[in-house]
Length: 265
Image 1 (cartoon, rainbow, N blue to C red):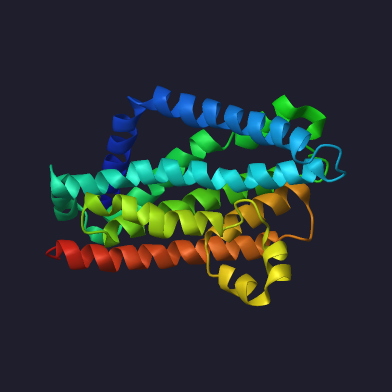
Image 2 (tube, rainbow, N blue to C red):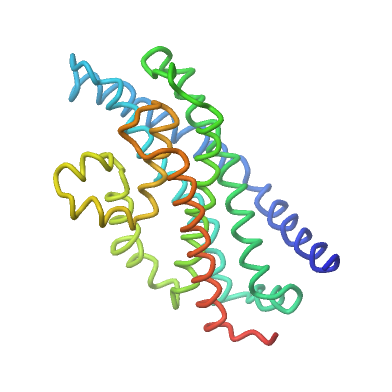
């Protein structure tokens, strides 16, 4: 067990070392440019044009900002995880890894690294929004502890999802199909612009179906943590949903990975 832990930590450190060489790329793109673009678009332009003069313009702004966080997490984790798919077609470094640690721990290491990496660059997002937008970004009812918790679990869930998708995919040629057929529909129907209670009001059936979308627990959790409004899912509901889907994706990834790699135990 100690030997496995040492190898696990060595692989984890190796990933941090490799990606530390590109830290400026992720810092500029995901910690600076993404928040600035979102703040300009959804913090200033949308409230002052589409929602100009409306009483709930600030609430609408928070709804949009929270929903679009999905895209940042999905982009970061998918960029990180897709290297596993390219590796299977080229260098086959993963073959060496599974001989040293085993499939279950290798996949767990990927999830932990991707989660921590995404969380580090994403965690300042709402603090930056507050600093730049000031009073327009209403945080009177915000629980920052819950914001951090849901942000971390969101990174965990989406990192598990992207790993699951990569393990199921047969080749890199399927990446565009995955985005068009799966990622974008999950993103759009995951509370990207429209909260769950609005979907449920329009169609009860659609509302119940959307509960099967893991992304809805990301947006609902962030909106509840920021606004404190009971219109959104409770924090415990979102925590259970994110953890449950994370476990489901991990199990599915493990099954698919074993089936493709056929590792020798």
